[in-house]
Length: 256
Image (cartoon, rainbow, N blue to C red; front, side, top):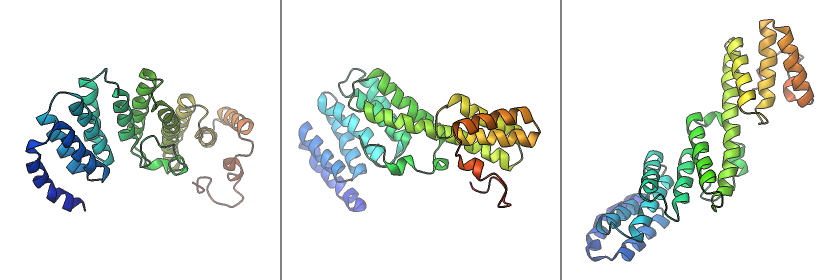
């Protein structure tokens, strides 16, 4: 279907010579709504080139960013959104451009203004790029800070909460790696960093456990006991504690 749509595009562009700005926009929007993102981008670009001024050209620039986002072209979506923000910093829909930047870095598939679903919240955090997660968080934070009353702000806040958990767990995953390699000092330091930078996230429980086991392996009994006390106080029923007794004879990290 995509190849077919692309094949028809040259003919449509040829016919567009006498189109008005509204006709250009309507045709491009049709392609966009039908999922023909490459065709839509070409038409929006043609609209902007032929009618570079006015509301249709401005809207076309924003639609191009959205089309790139939907087509999973992250870099182009970010560039298009940044271009719109630079050209139209006071536009009534500039908050949408900031939102698109966050979505492009968030790299999810649940659609605009969607509630963060259980699928997203329970996804494998190791599959996420921590750099993109941090950038997405900053994009959404800028949106919420600049436009607190934006209709996109509530969704952005939900995604920010999720992203903090993502980055925190990524730090813990690095600590896990050091533990498996016997790098106990590095593991303890990474887990401690996660606790300080991202408190009260789901990763806190495992970070404390890693600190406890790393200090134990290093023979640092005072620090081990401190970590154990904090963990037992805050997570008395932790699965990490119950699975680390050694009753099964398996190494404590096997349940990961």
